Image (tube, rainbow, N blue to C red):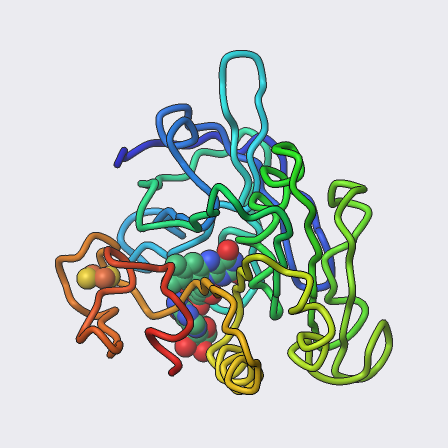
Length: 257
Ligand SMILES: Cc1cc2nc3c(=O)[nH]c(=O)nc-3n(C[C@H](O)[C@H](O)[C@H](O)COP(=O)(O)OP(=O)(O)OC[C@H]3O[C@@H](n4cnc5c(N)ncnc54)[C@H](O)[C@@H]3O)c2cc1C
Ligand code: FES
């Protein structure tokens, strides 16, 4: 874990209310893995006091350096401040933190399920899987077409199916309604989204004759990000766990039986 001043390399809007920042902080980017996160300070001085957790969205090699991107929705004070960062600005952050996704060696077909801004954490997994010769299908759900992460920004080998609440793109309804038709194909499932999506996924999984392994990233409010303050504690089948230290990756069944 490294505390760094990261340089904002670029900042652009990715889709409605969502921004993509590429950052340079070599010690942080070097060791980070898909599904891990960083804690980023979102203001000058002490206001807001607490850093905000953000997933690693993407990685790229620039010369000797491995740069990384974050993708975030403008939600409140912290992300509004981040939204206004420009190339050349510095931001304080530390990471990488937590346990990221774990792909089994024998898994060839990976099914990725994204709800809303949950897409952020899944793109680097798709990048790595495709580079490693695996097949990837991404099911992406959003409120409207304007909130979908553009599939043109994904590796062309990724098969994408979308669902929107209002039917403005893809299936009208929940992304989890697409699951049953893709599950038989998948060796492993990886998801990132709100708890309501995980509950719906768990209901689908319970109806399957054979249970596929499903890894999810949990989101909780975090203060320290390092297992000290206990504000991210969740109940699992194995007892109380800390999302920042024991997660954010959990088996779906551990948390949503
Ligand atoms: C491990 C992890 C990874 C994350 N990765 C991303 C990411 O890649 N992109 C992204 O956009 N967001 C991500 N988040 C959520 C992000 O941390 C919050 O959106 C952010 O902290 C909001 O800060 P704010 O100051 O803008 O909002 P605040 O003013 O603090 O809050 C605005 C609203 O957002 C809600 N909120 C705040 N923090 C969280 C949280 N942790 N989870 C759910 N709701 C929250 C508040 O309850 C409130 O309704 C992640 C959270 C975790 C725990
Ligand atoms: S955020 Fe402090 S223990 Fe998890």
